[in-house]
Image (cartoon, rainbow, N blue to C red; front, side, top):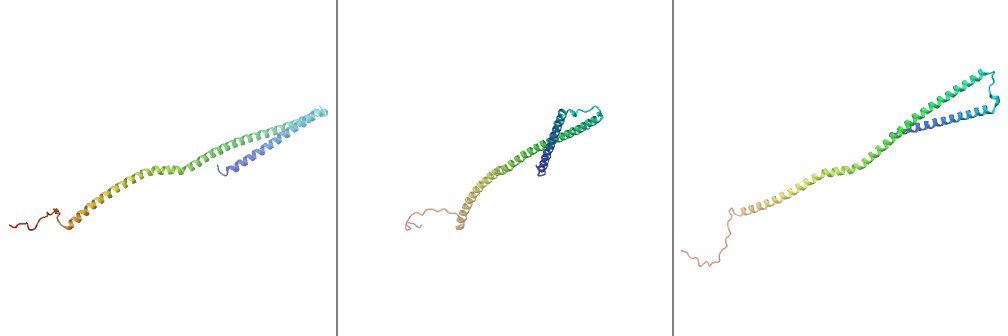
Amino acid sequence: MSQTDTPNIQALSTEVSQLRQELQLRDQLVQQLSQELFRLVKGNANFIPQRSQPELNMSQLQALREQLQAVEQQVTFYQEQITTRDAEIYQLRQSVQELTDRSRMLEQVVQELPQIYRRKFEERMTPVREKVAILQRENRQLQAELQSVSYRLALKTRNSSHSGIDLPNFPRPISNQNNISTV
């Protein structure tokens, strides 16, 4: 709900209250006038119109009827306005309720977003972690093979640098050098 709707609702509510007060005041005035008229007619025998002035009484009666009709038209007009305003108020209340519900839903979604992002991030990171673990295992294997090859190469290089040929080492027998005969 926008900020401009709140003053409109308050203004409409104030106007409806004023119209209802005016309608009640007019109803009270009509009631008082009818009671006063009834009291005057019932309690006053002189109030009975004389037969000599029928045109005057008829014109007064006609004027009263016109006034009554005008008041009835005003009452009908105000009732229509009240009905229209009540319908507007009902619609505004429903839209306020809908917007409140939507606002609550959006607040809940906003509160859940960090958890959703964490979960999605974890889902995306799982294959990456697995691949890193595989690469680390392969790396260790390759390093072990490299060390083995390096060691063998170092041994070969060291042996080949001493002499060009690998000669077997035979044990020397213990013998007298005097016993060697010369032929």
